[in-house]
Amino acid sequence: MIDTTTTTPVLRVQDLTVRYGNIVAVHSANLEVRRGERVAVVGESGSGKTSLANAIAGFLDPLAGEVDAATLELDGVPLSRSGEQERIPRRTPGLSMVFQDAMSSLDPVWSIGSQLIAVLRETEKVGKKQATQDALQWLREVGITDPERVMGAKPHELSGGMRQRVMMAIALSSKPSLLIADEPTSALDASLAVGAMQLMVDLAERVGTAVLIITHDIELCRRFTDFVVVMYHGEIVEQLRSSELDNATHPYTRGLLACVPTLRSARLDQLPTLESVRAEAEEQAA
Image 1 (cartoon, one colour):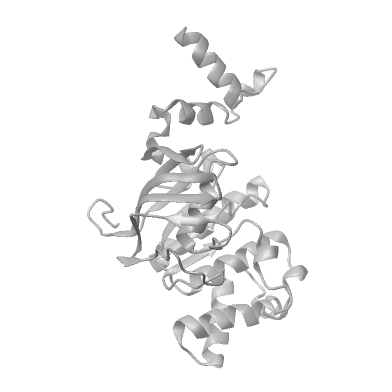
Image 2 (image 1 turned 180 degrees about the vertical axis):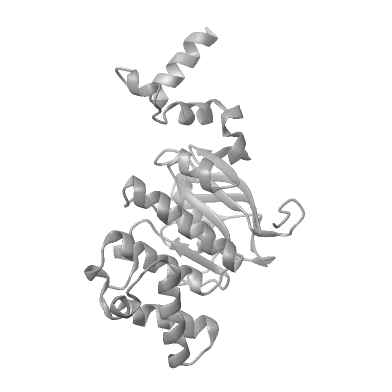
């Protein structure tokens, strides 16, 4: 087991700010992810989670958004591209990303095999024959039992769960230092979500990849990650171990936890919401 307290950070982010015109989506974010760690970024919609992930991955168009950071490094190499007007998406060696909508992330014209082989030939520098064999093996690794058929299929011919598995194979086949997964289970039902998350973290551990997960699902964070980063109105307001979530001190984190459905809350006429939790906290303070 890797000692994450002493290893050099795979990802270092200091004072990262993302602006869309006059709107500040992320304000002075500080974050580190070490080798072997699984870190979740949580918060309600609009809290800045995806903007943070896209800024790190290089998926923000300079014409649409502005990224400033004192430090933005992957494996000690600066990622900051301030002032550059490059086309996106741009490839960053050592970094892969899985999006929540696998259908729109995969090329609808190319077969699954063609897309996976293209990644393997670029990253592994192998011939087409070896890349084809490796592609079949990666499809098996993500639990696809008929890889030959899937290799020849187009994305629309596969189920949502199968497409998500293909995206994991493509993302992890390059054996990146860091995998960013943006809501990787939001399009899946509860049982498939647990299986997909387990598969992703197991494969990432096998190839030595750190994982940064953007999610709404507090319980999946508790079960599959080491640390939780909480965002609220564009700011990181709390960072703590996933196993210590119940000891969170920030009111917003406490509110998120209170909104998670439980057997106890099933007896209530109305489930708690962030607004109701805030109101209750204010009443108790008064």
